[in-house]
Image 1: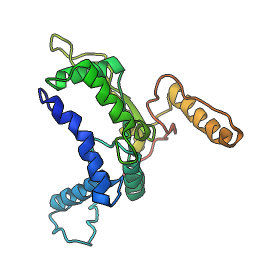
Image 2: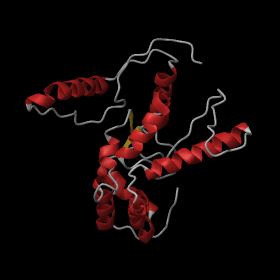
Image 3: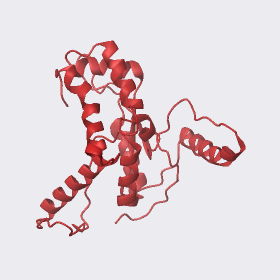
Image 4: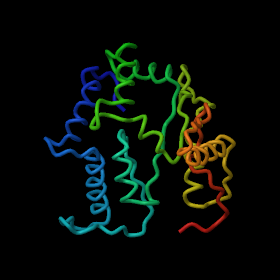
Length: 229
């Protein structure tokens, strides 16, 4: 985490990513994700002690590993990683109230300011053209949602009992690995029905909206107790 860095730095990041996606005329909206894939390949080869050779895949050795990519900001990046890694890929959407996000930008960037924070959040969400940041579209492709509104630490430095991100991620791991019976929450069931109705009504001119509160998981599927591999 970076604190006290200049507003110039974080305001220039979307432009840098856009240039990367433009590729000097060779359009590739998923360019950032391709960089992630290459890095994963390098780290996997290093962890297995094998020589990295162009054109030769680095086959997983069966040991459980997780590669955390922070973060995806364009739907094309999500599509590429999902098509490549299939069920091994999980997109986690992090939710936070707007005022909390603004306050955190104040803390994170030395010369942020409210106006600049709002400008940055808007550009980050909506982007500029096909190669700009499109966080809002990528966010709604998430498989699981985590609410990070609560502060991890209280002003006095003590842990906040209402910060439950660890518990939320633990629940995701249980769902992925079929460790125990995990039933969908009410909000997850509601989102599931909304998505079904939107698909059914798409060709009938009907509009269905999602619940006001984001769900913990986008794919509510109860998991029975099984033995994980």
